[in-house]
Image (cartoon, rainbow, N blue to C red):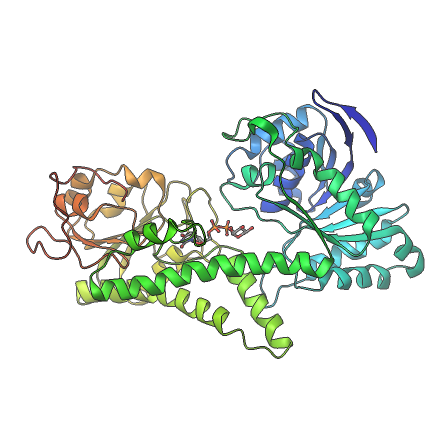
Length: 489
Ligand code: UDX
């Protein structure tokens, strides 16, 4: 590893290869280059490779292209399709290829096997291999075996390769921030030297000694040290699954409470705010609504369930968290059916399609699932999303250029993804566009009074009964006349 002086300290620049330039790999590659390492990222898809080389992140991730641009201009980041080229100069290789859930629910390791075989084929010097992708618990040892099985000289491979688990905790939409300013860095290995090599790669991030970036909040004043957890392979892998499964369970918990709130007339958002004041609970991930989606929670919870069952355990809580989550999507359809009396021929406008705000990712998006269910029930569905402009797999949905065009002639409007852009929607104008008055706030992001004040009947998830202009039923907190535009709770 070559030495690289920085303003604050002697930084040992590692020579890093990152395999897979998707959501995780591109952030890891650009992030490690930014903090001072020499990074070669491998992407075998030629179209994506061309895009990356021209500076496009090929995904929507705030701040990523700026990070790439700086690193590429500094000569510390490059992209290639050639594994041998990437390995030639690498001391540490991060594997960031996809491990999507197969039909059965277990992670598809095909891409990992391909990378392992390619590593074995080109291995000619010591290499630390880091699994960044979310892999089933115990995969680190599996990967070592695959590497040896693919080698002409397994003993030599065993002597040259150290396997490390370094699970990612990146959230889409804030991945650059999460990588450069993480809550913790977890490094697991049964090979102490390999573990320390990866710890050295993370030192600039752990110590906060890297140049601030354009993405707000990254210049961490005071250089608070980030907790670095050193542990064994299996523990590091389990820590990732347990973290995601807990977050998913926390969301399903509040969604269960929301159902009860709906029945007894409480407001789950106020219940959640009150709960969150207890530091043992915390206010994050207590947002009731359509529930969780994305490429991680569903996959990781399903994988953990499969692992538990392999060991003869019945993961009752994880099963419950999953079934509550699926139920949330049905619940919104049922509420619309109740209010519109029939969905066949009904016009429903869905605002928000990405699985969460801040991303263009549609993987397991609750909003898209909802659109699918409505189309299957014969409804005419229109939709608008600030970033997603097409639903290739759902051509029946009419995509609109803005929320008001989506709402034109609609019997009901559903807020399915709580984009910041929607909070400033002109509710009276939206109401004038619609045919009906149902406003289904499936992410509890609006003020019921403001929505009712615009002439809608408000429906939230666990936010007491609807609030209608005529009926005046449900909670109507005393106070000033409702604001004339949407406002968050
Ligand atoms: C998640 C984990 O947060 C991250 O640590 C891990 O590395 C990858 O998986 P991500 O899937 O990008 O990140 O999104 P996240 O912000 O966790 O949201 C996941 C889903 O939960 C989204 O569909 C979101 O809408 C939903 N959600 C989140 C809720 O329904 N309620 C909440 O209060 C928070």
